[in-house]
Amino acid sequence: MAEPLSDNEQRAWRTFIESSWALHTHLEDDLRAATGLSMNDYHVLVVLSEAPGHRLRMGELAGHLVFSPSRVTYQINSMVKRGLVLKQPCPEDGRGQEAILTDDGMAALEAAAPLHLITVRDRFIDRLDPDELDVIARVFDKVRKA
Image (cartoon, rainbow, N blue to C red; front, side):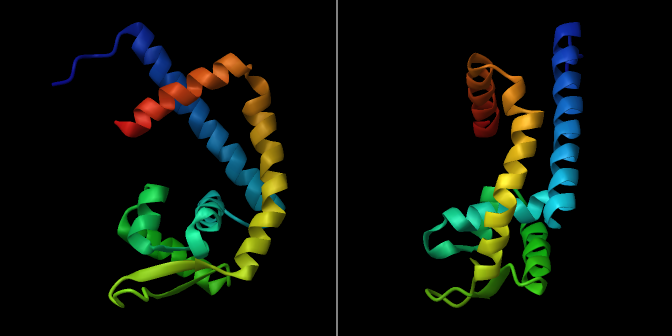
């Protein structure tokens, strides 16, 4: 059985969970209200926009998004219906599937990015000083690698 959290550990954990959920809720609500996109939609668009040829194998995309294969399939199928991405067999082997950013998907990302940035700045970046941002980057890079 795991050792109980100390008061300091409990405070840190609860503060992280509650603030991260609140931040995600604000980001999701503001993005959806301004653009109709969910945070998952936005993250897919960002990852595909940064990929070579604006395309990734579904498994690779799932890894970037930290999604299960079934969750990324569901997400991409939803976005295909809205014209934001395409899904097609991989040209190299034909067995796997690739997600491909469409022109409409890129346009949606370009329209959403400045609006999303306003919320990111207001709810997170502008509330912290540069040293705090450096600490957050170091801490969560360590957590991500674990």
